[in-house]
Structures are given as structure tokens and as C-alpha cells.
Length: 381
Length: 159
Picture 1 (cartoon, helix red, strand yellow):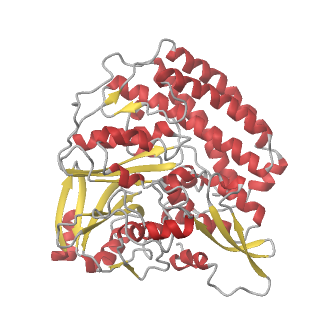
Picture 2: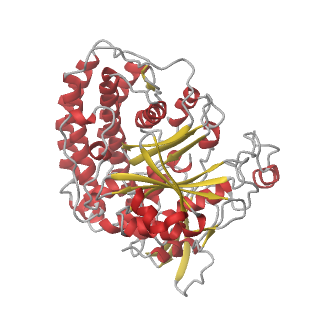
Picture 3: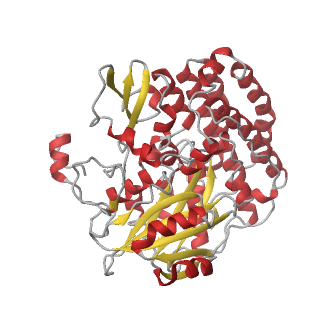
């Protein structure tokens, strides 16, 4: 079991008395490998990390406060700005949470199109993670390959809703836009091509001696610790816990498709890499199954123009690319939410960072930040 | 399940309801830590998904502290709620679920709820010297700590 008292110990790096050979090293908030404005205070003994503290909040925009002053529909685009490399997933979670709160449901056609776009988004998010993570560790090439394929996904988004990043692709109750002519063809073409591409990335990294040396045994997280520290998504699965909300509590149209949940064994950076690579293949499989049989019918459910969910509350969590993205929404029966709490996977996965870096070298810190796959827009909200 | 909680803690579980088919237990403030420990060890709720708060300024005890739990063995969710008044400390659950550390810091940051026994209760997102608790309902959306902004950012207003 994790030692809870240890959790806060690293937090006081500044107030603890330093040993003769110890120094405090400040990393960030402007540092290329922190993936945004994350500041890490490291307590070092030579090259060895003996404690750390994350200083966050540089991107805090008060999204939860804004939500209380907007109508349910007006708030939807704001969630795209949290995890800005996976905007579609954020939107799906929010729309489904509000639908649950109202007791409404999106029609089958909308649910399948949502599933396809969300899985494409998962691939895009993982590609961006892979490219930058490899770049941090010193492999320059994968970034160009990954961004090349990600571009194809963003083109599909652009054709679908006109935006590439902050898409606002879904609406509460279903979809605003029908799929465009050739949507299915675009998705199939991407998926057919993509299989070879993942093999190509793997040929660059999986048995590369430098890659293996930099990731194996680095940032080990046991399954018990992962659960105790609330880790979710690939970070949890890399530690060997076979849990995915798409299977455990299916939403959208996931109950209709066959796919595997890849898990790791050792809980190190290398296993999390393998898990995410396999997840991309599984997402591709889901897309192919879904695009083959998109049901015909309406794309918008029966929801009014003015949304007034009955008083009460709901929690809805989805499997976003980074982990469990949850929305806890309280309604007081008016057109504006009384309270929206967003459970950001990046923030909670980052909490375990201190535990993972201890005992490693400064160079490994970069690998561990990369393997957690955080987006600071979501950490700070 | 709610029956078991009631049998075990009696009147300290003031209310057992469900909203949108999601189970909610209203727990007395003083026994929160015991209920948390029981939930983890005996009911299998080993995963603290989320810990947050809601402000109801017109109520005598104005805050709802909300814990969303999940159980891997049972694949079930449970929500614990505690009514907390201003300046009433709540026992921390960091010893039960270490992940509560940052979540409680965020609640302290945004609502000003004090967690008794927390190893490191400081603001999480806002600067430490910031005055006020932004997610309270009486904190206006345009309000900010002007003095802090002037002093630290060197501008008249952040608006």
C-alpha cells in the first residue's frame, strides 16, 4: 500500500533543510519538455532526484466558474479548451453528462458518429504524445511521422465541422452536422493506411536500444499505487490494471464493438508506451467496425432550444485519451448549471509524478513527464 | 448496500438517496473519515474518483463536500456527501486515498474548506497570497484580488 505521509513530503522541498550536497533545481514554467507551463522544483543530490514539487496554475482560467455564468449550450465550446489536443473527447463527456442530467439520449446515428470521431481523436492525441515524448528523449524522427498522420485526422475534423483543434463537434442531444459526403471513405482510407504506420513507428522505437534504455525501469508505478493515487487511463493500464470505462461502463456506442484493453506488466515508461501503441491499433479497429454500419436516422434527439434540466445532479465519466474525464454537474432547474466540476485526468495523473521521479536522474524527469501525457490546459483549467 | 451503511453507522448516515440512478449517502461531518475507511476496506471502494464541493450560501451549513467513489471489484459508483459550515474543519481522507491530497488542496483553494490533518494544505492553482475563494457563490465572476494583480503583475487590472 502507498505511504500517504510520503505524498506530501516532496511538497516541502523549499522548507526542508538541505544536506551538504543537495541543491534545488527549478525546471519550467518555460521549458520545452514540460509540455506547457508546468514548473517543477527538484531537490537533487548530484544528478539524483530525491524530492519534487509541481507548481501548477499558470493556465488557470476558472473554467468551472465560467460554467456557472453560461447556459448549458454556451458552455460546451469552453470544454474544448481544456485538453486542447483532444477537444472532441472533452465535448463528448460534457454533452453526455448534460444528456444524462436531462434524461435525454442522442439517437443511434449520432452515437456512432460520435464514437468514430472520438476514436480518431484518441489516435490523434496518442500520436501527438508519441511524437513529443520521443522528441524529449532524443528521437527526432517520430515527431514528423506522427504529425503527418495526425494531420490526416485533423483534415477529417475540418471537413466535418470546419475546425481542426477546438472543434465543438457535438451538441447536447446529438449532432449539429450530418457527416459529409465521403466521410466513410476518408475514415476507411485513413484506417487502412494507419496500420502500416504504427508498425513503422514501432520499428523506429520498440527495440531501439537507446529507447529501451531510456524507458525500461524508468518511473515504475505499481498497480496498488496507481489505484491509491487515482491514476487512470494508460497510466493505470500500464501498471497492469485492466480497466477501461469504455468496457466497464459503456457509453456512446462502445458496447457494439469488439476491441481489446491492452495492459502492461511492469508499470514503467516502456510499458505505458506499448499500451498506448496498442490502443491506437484498437481505436483503428473500432473506427473500421463503426464506419461499416452507421445507422440511418436523425442526428438530433428531442431536446428543446432552451435547456432546463430538472434539479438534481449527475456524475458522468468517460475514457478520454488521458484517462477518466469526469463531469459532475449540479442543476437548480434553471438554464445555467449551478455547478460544474471537471475531473481532469491530467491533473490527477500528475499527482503521482513525485512518487515516480524519486531515485531517478534529472534526464529521466523529462521521460516521466512525457509518459504521463499531461496537457496543462486541462491540469489548470 | 445503503442498508449496510445504515446498520453500521446508524443515524450518522442522515440520508440515503439516489439521483439519476446514482447512489448518494449524506454523511455526518465528524465520521467522514470512518465512513471513508469502511468504504475502502469493507465495501471495496478502492478508487477515489473525485473530491469536490458545492456552495449553497443560503443554507445554514453552506458547503456540500462531495466524494465520488468507484469500486474496481464491484464496478460500481457511490457518492458521499457531507454538509460543512464555514470554518468547520473536515477530517482529511488523504490517509485513506492518497490521491485526495491535491483534490483537497483544490477545494481549499476554491472554497476555503479546511481539512484537518492534511499533510500540506496550501492553495493548488491560485498564488498562495491570493485573497478570497473564487468558487464561492458570493465571489463575483469579475472579482479578483486587485492588490495581488497590481503588485505582482504590474498592471492595473487583469480584466
